Length: 375
Ligand SMILES: NC(=O)c1ccc[n+]([C@@H]2O[C@H](COP(=O)([O-])OP(=O)(O)OC[C@H]3O[C@@H](n4cnc5c(N)ncnc54)[C@H](OP(=O)(O)O)[C@@H]3O)[C@@H](O)[C@H]2O)c1
Image 1 (cartoon, rainbow, N blue to C red):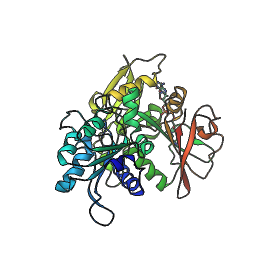
Image 2: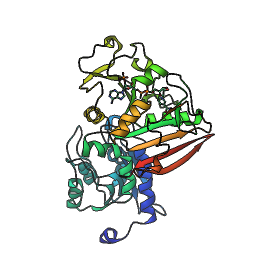
Image 3: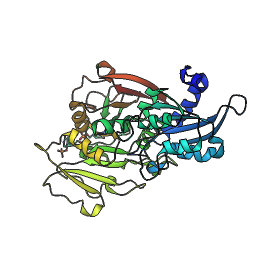
Image 4: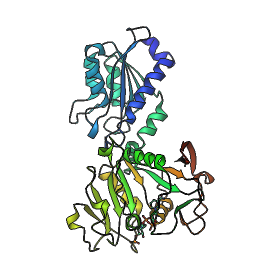
């Protein structure tokens, strides 16, 4: 076992951790406020190159944990196994006992961890407990990938607010609408389906009253089989001017709605079933960082913003965008159209030093560009 501690990670180690990371992603959008974790258990002494005896990922609502599920599958074969887990195993008593104790009781020999848990209740104590029990513990394998998957959980732990992904669909010349108030589908079916997948992977989705009045959207995930992963819907409507009959206020696909209204604003939403959240406003404007802190307390770790120019501007001005999912259609709308931000200079985030393009995906005639904030 001393050899294992000192040797570099092997190709097999990397492959098992990649599998655990893929499993972890399956929890995105359903586990908040818990982290999305994946776990693979391997018996290196079985088969030609070892045998995978258990796999698990954090289940809906955060329980059971990935390790619990993988250990259940492995049964007695967990004794003497190597465990690959994307986040440090928990070491505190929640609704169930700590995963560290379950791993020790199962008799596992080694645990390879991608990322140390930033939760102050864990933060290295899980690693120490495993080591104390004589288990070989290795850390930081694919830690950047694990950090990215749990960017929302980490944001809440460190800053009290969710990770914010701004989703935009524009024409080739950067317009989000032909004319304010006129509904228009800019991208094709494949791009819209990808947009729904991003909704499913977020805990909350936020829009502005301007979009509700113009488009009357539902903002649910309507991909077959993923309807139950619709995010909670939040509407910024300081003057409460949206119609109580707006589709977004109707319970749909198990997704509840909540409206941020200015303190003291009268409203007609009482019978809609939506939560009404009064917020302090200055000159009719909310401080978006206060809204994000409030969302953090409501268990939202990953927030998608799908709105018009007004809300896009508010988030950009407050430096609150962590990631951008920018869908571009091939056709132009022209200079009469509405741009993403009122400052038309920002036609592409990679023109600014703040964002870096990390991915480009072709979706039929459209394209998805993903950007990450780099500073
Ligand atoms: N292609 C796309 O990606 C996309 C996505 C969504 C929407 N759209 C289009 O965008 C257009 C609507 O644009 P929009 O700018 O009117 O919509 P919006 O951004 O969804 O909503 C703007 C409204 O939100 C409120 N607001 C904005 N900042 C605020 C702040 N800091 N505090 C409090 N309230 C704030 C204001 O309401 P009050 O005026 O009541 O104060 C403002 O009028 C539509 O044509 C729609 O189709 C395009």
